[in-house]
Amino acid sequence: ETGVTQTPRHLVMGMTNKKSLKCEQHLGHNAMYWYKQSAKKPLELMFVYSLEERVENNSVPSRFSPECPNSSHLFLHLHTLQPEDSALYLCASSQDRTGAETQYFGPGTRLLVL
Amino acid sequence: GQNIDQPTEMTATEGAIVQINCTYQTSGFNGLFWYQQHAGEAPTFLSYNVLDGLEEKGRFSSFLSRSKGYSYLLLKELQMKDSASYLCAVVDSNYQLIWGAGTKLIIKP
View 1: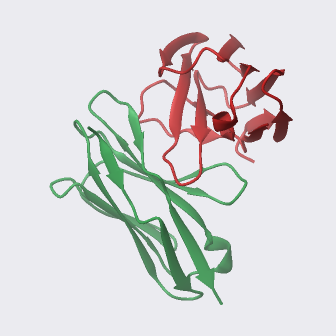
View 2: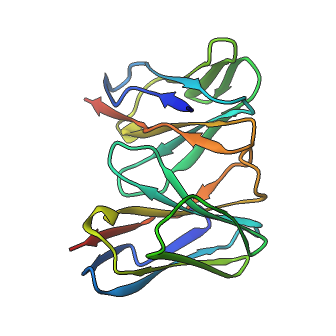
């Protein structure tokens, strides 16, 4: 248990569906992250929030829409996804935004797009 | 471009020692992380090196040579539970975290 939870753990959706991934951290951290993890590829940083403000958006398609209502919660809203979006989506948090801070990860949501 | 290289997969025997290498070419350097990720689980922090040398933490040690752009993770007295992927990540000059693709370690009895 790392103090970061994610729901759902598994999700299957069609290309026309709309779904949301949820992340919650219980560590009192100020920064939260969304990553995409595909087999045999490096973690891809998607979004970074610091003190509830989005500070980084790494050229992610608009079919992914993040939301950070407070410093403990982070959502990733999904719509009209493509099969190549199937992957493990990991949420992480750290005390502050700088990359030198240890990041604490949730268990991830395994997403399959049909 | 920025690049982190680590072997895709390694196999070792229970009770033995294994060394997982990581080489990097990044724009600047502000530290190197090792994380462990069991299948279907969250990556968890193992070590952080910012100065040259060896840091030991129980059965696990991490080494850094900044001049060579090289690090390794040394696992001693291997146990079956050490079967996992090991991720190397470097903090660049902009304090961005650059990730390697991970090394899958298989432990055999």
